[in-house]
Length: 327
Image 1: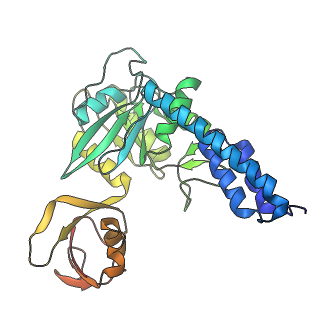
Image 2: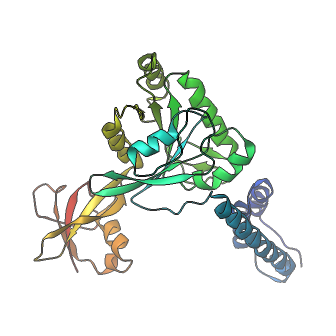
Image 3: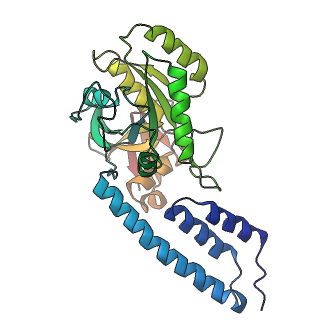
């Protein structure tokens, strides 16, 4: 019996052949299995594809173990994960030390950072994870770093304002593109059909205390301001750090929502973290998957037309809203 595979199958097969890492290949094979008709004519093909998934899964586990041994595996923590990326000697480690309690090795010579290092940045009442990384440029580093960069909530490109900033940004974007990581362009999914990872990005101009920094910052904003948030700091002098923390929080596109039980005070210590423009129903689902179904209504302080307004599941929440759920 002929397989009679549809055109979509061959498109998925092409993505499989072009994929660079085991996880991408597994995703393409799973898509192929979902597309193909299931009958006697495809039994052998199905078995072959499942065998490939098993082999690639083992390869993926070995790769992950290698990343962990090499220090290129970072457990996500906090309200969001921001990964620093950029050329050598732009001050990423100094910036991590200035914003968090992490203590990376800091020196005036390049390539001091050998493995990614995380630190937690306090912003208002939440913690945001920042990750310093080795400089881009070596293929082996790029391959190892791709696993960290692809899962970041935000990639912050750090450049030296004492040098040509446009060259540094273009260099970094080119290096990221080599790992199939690109910034958003309109309404795009997180991973495209060809295995390209779409990640939000921001630009941090460090060393704002150096001669020529103001002119270089103006160049950055003129060239990239319409596409990326652009901030200027001096990690060494401690200038602009408060403004940078606020800009990074905004770039994550998240909000804090506080919960309140009927008849009790609001919990203002541990907010629920949601994406920007999340609805009340999504907030309920974030608390528990069954909570959304059981929810009758909620009372909101903050984004309502008046304080203590009763709202439906479709109500769009805003940062620092207080929500009282009723089931």
